[in-house]
Image (cartoon, rainbow, N blue to C red; front, side, top):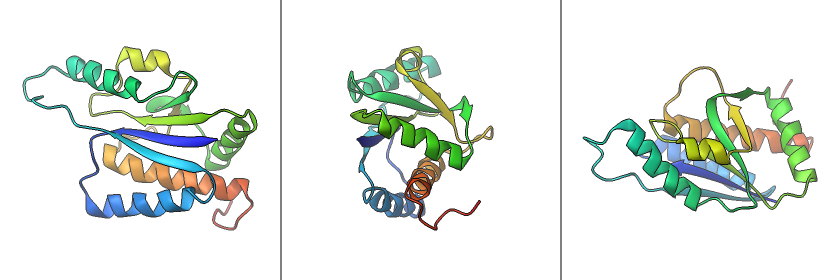
Length: 157
């Protein structure tokens, strides 16, 4: 099975992008992993938030396959401890899915169409984080989950 992370806009902070790259390389030792970046929308200064959500949502959905299992990283999603996330991920791998797609939305969140397409909503925290930081936090947690699944000594309970 492969995993994709879809994100809106590129990562501008060098220290964050370097961290993401480190964890991406580590994740690729366990499974196919790709990051898909949806380009920032143009001319949004006077565009209402709901219109931005809809346009971003359309671009996101173009990157999702019909057989993909779609997980939204959403503050209102289910919170899992890291070991629970590892168990959840292991079950998805056992179900022989082709691809799990994790999606980080833009500043305005997800459109209703994206919410409708989602199979699961996952929350990293009840707190609000900058979208670029969420990318790094998620990449680390995904790597940590694989080390738990493989019984490697990275994670300590």
